[in-house]
Image 1 (cartoon, rainbow, N blue to C red):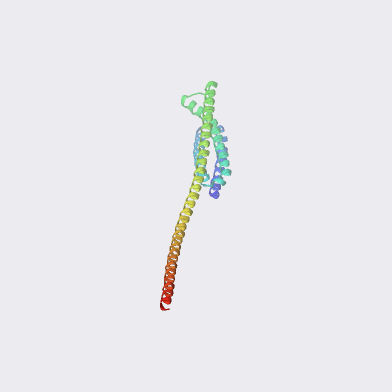
Image 2 (cartoon, one colour; image 1 turned 90 degrees about the horizontal axis):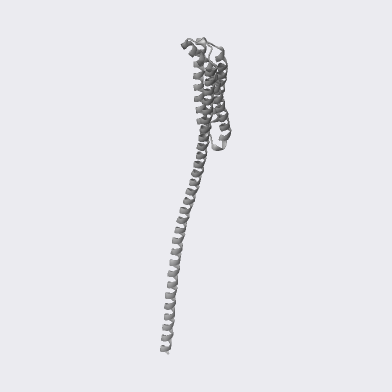
Length: 217
């Protein structure tokens, strides 16, 4: 499991390094070259997000006792992804201004109020993204807690089932013992009855012998 995670991790590190390099180049380019660079960065950001999703799935399959370290690393990677997206948004402001000026035939000098408005919108988007990320992290942690609870319940259920099996086995053994004791008691009673009968026969025989002995004299 950790080997697969490390493979995704290496791919993610190489990809984010390339994305960072390209984001730094976007403001320095112009025209078609800048447009192509923006498209490439957008594509690579999607690939990075898919890698994060794969890594997240791998972390969920790791046993709970070993999951903490990987969860911390995932939080760092997601924060890094948020920063990359924020940097890309800032780098695209100049690109958006350039495209708008080309469409409107502007001379390239955008007003300060429009730029401030764009920056304000970008900051709002970043704050919303951070809130969504925090909500997602809470949901993931809640899911992990739920999984731990389910695992504990499953273990408790197995213990209860084993205890029930032992009780059934004990009941079976007690039933057998009870039947054996009942049979022994029955045989003891039968032996005592036989002894009483034999005693009566012996006493009766002695009485007859004495009687016939006196009668003969």
